[in-house]
Length: 485
Image 1 (cartoon, rainbow, N blue to C red):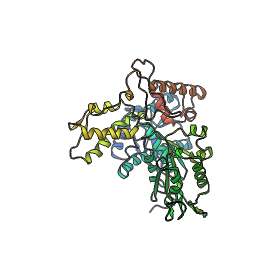
Image 2: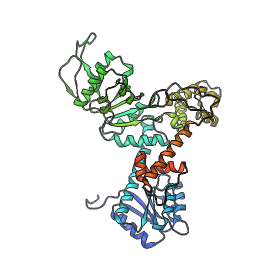
Image 3: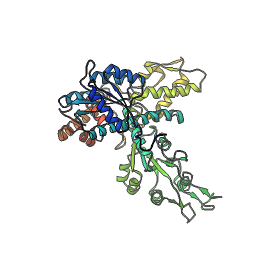
Image 4: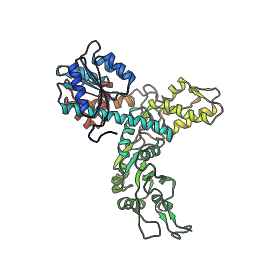
């Protein structure tokens, strides 16, 4: 049993430096902070440790012989792709440290460093490692517990959504989930509940668009016996059913102003009154609401109460449409095919041509449409291998070279289930070109304002430092000399 005064190891760190004194001093300092520390004198020795042990953070010198820090960085990330790396460098080698970050290092520290600076940077790197591990666990656990492959993908957009979801899950903050039809908003709500402190309690969904206005109030708040024609006995509402759990209110913008007023009062007071009763009942419910509309436009057009909007929009989770994460299509298609094969005596398999064919499509119906396409192909294909011709895609939604993107059909949101056909004569820029140009301009302007302080650049643009580095690399934007995170 660990003594209360003994530091509890909070991460495994590998220190690599060909100078023995520097390596030993750094390792001793990190051990005093409560970390489990290993040492290596060369890059080859470090790679051997990485192949045999779990390491959370690699702290390596840049200038080493015979293998330098950059080479070690590349090879280490091949062995352990989720490894966090901090480069130690002399002041005159900052440009090389910046290059290391472009290659995948998380951070760098300039020697000689102060104890507090090293501790701060190590803690940040390990916190990032823990967060990434949580994201990976979320992916695995979702697939096992709920079959939520439609939610979790490998794309950057889905990883950012999952990271944000994990951060808010442990709180009781009300969450507004915004996304097009078919993107999986209810799956996001279920994920939120599954990773909250309420996970062992009820998750209660209700679709406001599927219930008539006259019945919606009774459905949510309950009613007394005889409250209206047909109320032959008292009934608990969904708020009561979700007590101590999570209530998911889908398509909340489909409700009337009168109902919105009653919903607002319930959220403010934490109490419900059954229809036909005067006594209020206390409820402890975590609210997740969702809409496929531009809710800010609904507020502006006075179709949705502004005060209710602010009450719901404590934390916003935006579910990206499938066309913004086409790299997830192969894994999603395989998941849906595996599910179809489990119900069929004749298993199918996806061909490369079919996958390539699917990745040229805009998917106006999002993940739901992809699922339908795969199930249809599995049921009707003649051969055991699904080919491109087994997936009939609507021509107007194909992404063809030189074709102009379909225009948004709803203000503030990308196209939904209806997309305009692209003109065969269009020679203008693609949507990807427009987005890339806008990103480049925004980053360049922010760099002009903040110079070498990339942390402030990232804050202004509303992205993480890692995302900023990745975007700059993709756009061939070289950071200013001396840039720091």
